[in-house]
Length: 309
Image 1 (tube, one colour):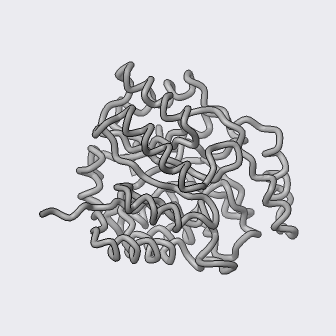
Image 2 (cartoon, one colour):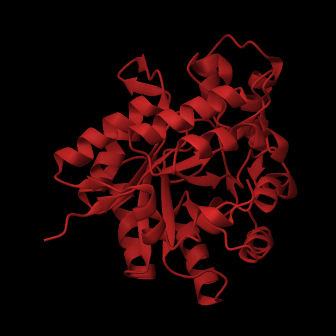
């Protein structure tokens, strides 16, 4: 009897948290490379990557910054590289898309609908900031719509399909699953779908276990056996929801992009620490973690030889 393989995706940096929130958040290309390599060594098959301004940690979508850390990760690991097209809600869609078009990765993220994306409650927890942009970044989320229209999604799909990049479809609510089903019906995406269900972002679905069950039930009805399901729990619910998802057939995503925590009231010192935490859960369930090549086969990826970095 074969043992189910679980893909661990790790997101070591990103646009949600800012440098003042944790001394362990990687900012410079060297730090991002080291964080990605450590996560892969801990068991992550997929690395979901953002870039930051090396001087102040501001989210950036400049392909030149990605090129400063991707070669080091590629030389040290066989991990699947997943480049964000989400970037930051404060960027234009063209800015967000630029790295994927330039670098032609095996995998890219794709947000499946416009939404409110409220980060401003963090202002109640974090009082001191090293850079002016950090407070502004959080405050502006009170009055911004994270734009992902049907036309935007079509543009990203059509821009990347010519060079074979597939997608991590980030679904923050039930409607996003129906949007994905719409594009599947139109033939603009094809199975196997990699459906990353995201829980706990203000403006999207909550982080209650019943929310997870509702997303799973809906995805099963819409996609049948034509998808790989993954769980992303934001904040302190990261490991709890990923563990619950693993018992229900899900792959999992962890990393400091999504949660800074390594336990109650304790900052994780690295994304690799979180990978080891969820790996312990997975192996405790008598499941196995997928290797990068097993993940490639499960997700129908083109292979590392056909990327542009």
